[in-house]
Image (tube, rainbow, N blue to C red; front, side, top):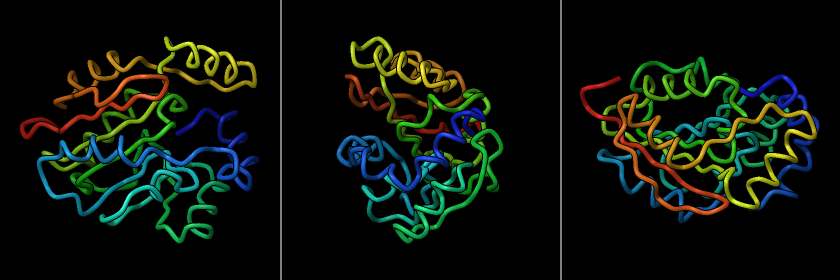
Length: 195
C-alpha cells in the first residue's frame, strides 16, 4: 500500500501517531458519504492505519485495511476495530464487498494509485461511494507538506482535487469535489454499468 520507506516510518511512529495527528474531519467525510446511492452497511477504511478516520464515523460495519502492522495493532487494540492487513493495490476482499470506501490522508502514500483506484472500483458495490480526504499540493501548506515528506524519504505522490476527480470519472465514478483547501475531499459514486 505504501512505499517501503513509508511503511517503516508508520510502523515506527504507530505508538505516537494518534497523539500528534488531528482527528479526521467527520463532517467532510459525512458530506461525501451523503452522495452514496445505496445504504452504507459495510465500509472499508483503506490505508486506515490506526483507525483515526474510522473513529470519526458511526453506523456501518467498518474494516480498517493497511500494510503497517504497527498501525493495525493500534486500530485493533487501541480502538477495538476490525483490521485486516492488505495492500491497496490488491485488496483482500471479494467483488462488490463494500458499500463505501474511505481513504483519509493516505492516498498520496500509495505507490500505484491507479491500481488502488481499480481495486476500490472492484470491491465497491454499484452505487456505492468512495470518499478520499487528501492534501492539495498547490496550496501553500500543501507545498510545505510535499517538501517535508520528500525530505524524510517518503515516496509521496500528491494529486490536486481536480486531477483526482478526473481520474475517478475515467474509471467509472461520478466524481464530486466536496470541499477544497489544504485538506480537500473528493467523492465518487460507482456507476452501475462499470466495475
